[in-house]
Image (cartoon, rainbow, N blue to C red; front, top):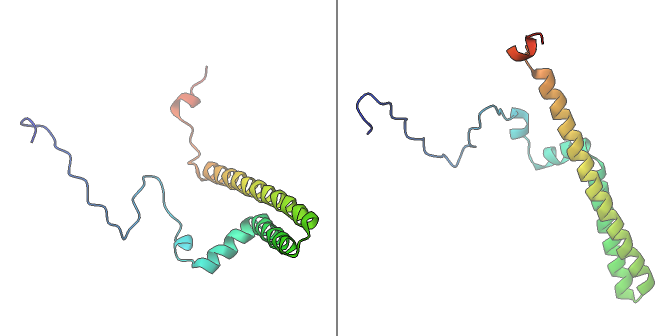
Length: 126
């Protein structure tokens, strides 16, 4: 208790592990909360189709390279390991392009959602 007349803030509510934390200014989309694994996978694939293509290319080059290594074809195995590295680089580049694209989309969306009123300082002439 503080001195007489002071306001004591209420104790914070206990964290409920069954519910996500409340973040000021953030409203999760109901559509994304209700989707299952396959729906989310398909949505993410449609948003950035190059990432799964790069993953499949990486896995294919690795698998074929290991098969060539087991058969004793060292030259082809080395070539496939180099192809795997290139496919991994392609996948990372596709991820980065997807991150930048998503950030630009969200920035455009937040600008369009604005109230349309500028701060008072911006409305005053110089």
